[in-house]
Image (cartoon, rainbow over all chains, first blue to last red; front, top):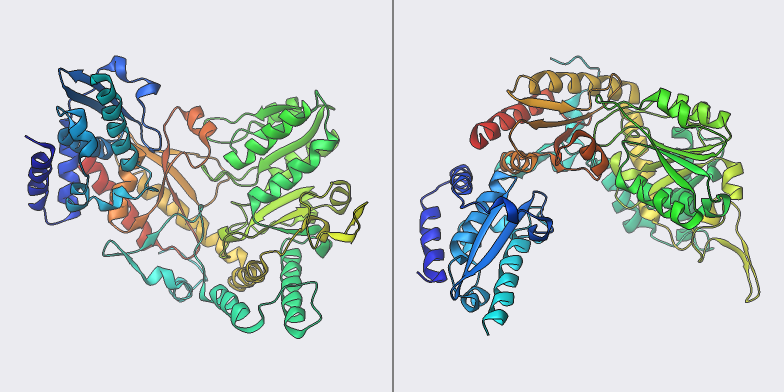
Length: 140
Length: 408
């Protein structure tokens, strides 16, 4: 599936929920199901700055596709990074660079997009895209 | 029921913001240690200033300037009276506690030499650590820490052992913003003076709850931020004993702080203007005075007594939640409850209770050393004011329980 298709799938899933509580409960579930980063990659280098909770992201290339794994010590943050990993992992770096992130708004997490928000969703997206830029250069 | 002589419902009507909703729920504002809300009386003082007599002070002969100067200086006198300060010129108007501390730390540069010691308490806010570290870098002085115990109380025996004739300055908050501990500042001040050291007490967190008598305390410097006591942001005060303020060099150069300027030499103005360069926050200063009037019209004895009962009730109720642990259990504490639930990140609790309209702070509260001491990433902090109610405490407890059920 393309990033766009995955994002639409996520929007569909979230559209089933009427209120914030169900959305949060679903995010918590997603967080718990996140494919965890290997312990050896939970280093300060892989820590995303600008988050009130700790978020680690690791990226590695599988042929021409970039695979992300992540973890966080806060479960809601883990849910958010799980959504991002699902949308962007296993994709070509150039597609990750080009992808837009408006689906976050559409699934009712707009408030998390504020640059001052302490969970640093903006920092997470930036970090994923930075990895894509780095690996894109490597692929060339 | 909490017994109080205060009419809390009438008081709440003074605060327009308390009528609003957040996420469709009535706002429950429990982040008072970060900033307090503003009563209509203070908002009116701000509006009156801009509508009626906005002018620059201390320099104009015209009527507006006179009126603004009178109101600003009247505010200084209100601060003087409130904190029982000997002279109005010992009240330096600043932009707040951080500014006040930096003014003193900067001034001490010329008084310290290599090997001198500065003592700071282990429960300081970052703004109370960094200026002293910078001062030590400039002078070669050494920063030493007065340790605390697990309850969040300073270890006074250790403090007395740390004091020596090398100690030049002792720095401590009156009340800890992260734990709520009320520190024994009278004992700290007296002991420091015994070895000839000056004492700066940060009253930012105390001022909304405790009316400090600065002459009785004998403290050398005391700092306050207006926005923590129903006033506006960006204004505060530094109290300094006259002898110290005369010795300290000016902090910033500019208008207002000079007596005479030529290109060869400038002579500085008398106190307090020597430390008040440039056009000050005139409106903020006047509103700070209005905030003191407002709080005094309610009465600090009644405020203290009511808040104590509210915090006691909140502590009892929160402790009924499984796995909840409170950090900071000092015998003397005020208005702050810092807590975590076992296995849950404080950020998650904060995010969920926000959805219920409840404002609490999560994180390290700009006091990372305290979090390192307890080996935790942060806490959830509920901090109370006299306008909070028992019903709001119940909503907090319900919200935390709901968060716990969702998260575990």
